[in-house]
Image (cartoon, rainbow, N blue to C red; front, top):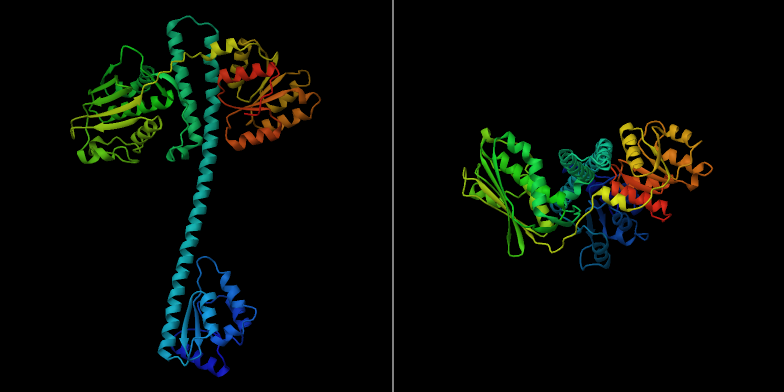
Length: 515
């Protein structure tokens, strides 16, 4: 409070004290601004104080308030016509209430209490904003930890996938002629590829909820997608004793689609039918052509869907209540992913059911494709690319991954040496001069970054091509490998076609950017 005289200050202080309002009296505007720095709920001052505020300290203080703050200012104005000082105060000071002198005690106390209640609400807003910021900070920290956990998990999952993929290609290169072995090998390769894609998604799970899944489209026969989906779902269908009837067209119906994602769509629909059908039930899967579309239908004679739930089945976390004895668990995201993936392919999905206990049918429609591109297997592609670098050093503490990759590269014509640690690799370079070093990053003791830096410091190290072959695949990981001196970055399990093409290009001295 800043009153015109000491007597006025004492009188006003007594009025406020009697009303239960604590106040601090200031002798001038500078002292008032200094007190504001200590904290205040409201300000009471006379019109003359605003006029004498030559340095505009009150205006500057109010302009620097936090976003939540709007300090109430009560001005006791001189009686009579509106003054320029009061008008300026109302423009510059913001939350201003003007009381004409002499003010009635009841009006003064009422205005002060109103200002204090308003300030109390601001303090509540401050607390709310603080709690929200703390919650946001906690969420950011949880999100950071989630990303860190997923990155570590993906790395650990990629490590065992690498030797499995390498071994499958070795089986192909060995020329195994047994049709059954070839069939099982192809099945295993499809499942490994599926696992690789799922691990990739694990690192970027947030993009699924934002609808930012990257599709890898190609021209593919819908029958192939259906067969792969059935293969994945067969254990669940057989375990329930269901009869699965499949009706495929006599000619190929090709679509421009991501085969893994479309197989995921079909698998989700088949799993859904298997879960919500009584044991020993029936499931029908059909593919047909209608005009310029491929129509895929998955129908069952199971639990059915109530009419009021039909519009909601594709909503996230929605599950149809079939009673406690029919609870199937799950998070209720399968059909949401089906709808998102189908729409990303430019298609549509619909559901129909005649009611509870009368089964249901899901129908997917996709545009037919005119493109037909015969593909090469990775082994066939590798056979076409030419000659690999003469000598390659493979460094990985995972012995299965290192040994299987070495055998694969030897089958492709390279001379390969293997080291199982960073120090072992540096020792090997004392008597070897490989053209390429395929180097794991996450090794105990001396990691791949340190090994790469030491190789670059050695005589002749600048001539070697360093390829990071690692389970770490985020942008920050690529940047770190580049800073450590690597020329290329490949994520485990590396696609054999990509790896062999890279090695061939290196042998041909083609400059390639870090990828």
